[in-house]
Image (cartoon, rainbow, N blue to C red; front, side, top):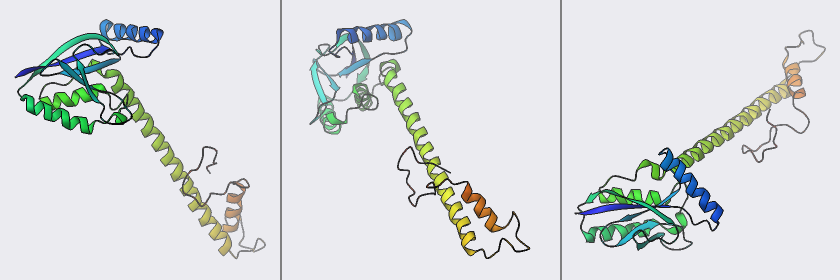
Length: 226
């Protein structure tokens, strides 16, 4: 058996000292001050002197290794022993090869598929607890916000589509009544409830050029909905 060690860094690779200092202050306040979380990079060390992590690249695998605690892109913060794995070295190497194929660099996503998600999967494969919640909490919060916004946008679009569809059905129905109606305006039976009056009333509510289109897809934000 061997320890599975989590190494955590402050993300200070923006290229701007001002931004890097801001991130350090954020992490100090949110993690060290109130224990909520921060903006961190993580890596896993198991067997040997290297740590393994995941990052963006245009081609090939995003899985990479470097000497433990020595990633030059970030500022080292701390290490946490997550537990022990009973997997042999050969099995660990096999897992790393498999994940190197699965975690391509171009699939990197800051909120949904970052280095912390990769380390979580490594921990699951190694049979040890996943990362503490505070390590990736900001990404989880952002991911949840994106999902909520996406669902809201989808439901709004769906509602607009249904409204347009309903208006088209109503328009065609009333237009059909108008074309089939033989009631004369001078007829003794004509009144404000006659089909012809209803159609006329309905058409007067539709400004010129705003009849429902034949397309069921909403093409732009400026389309009028009845």
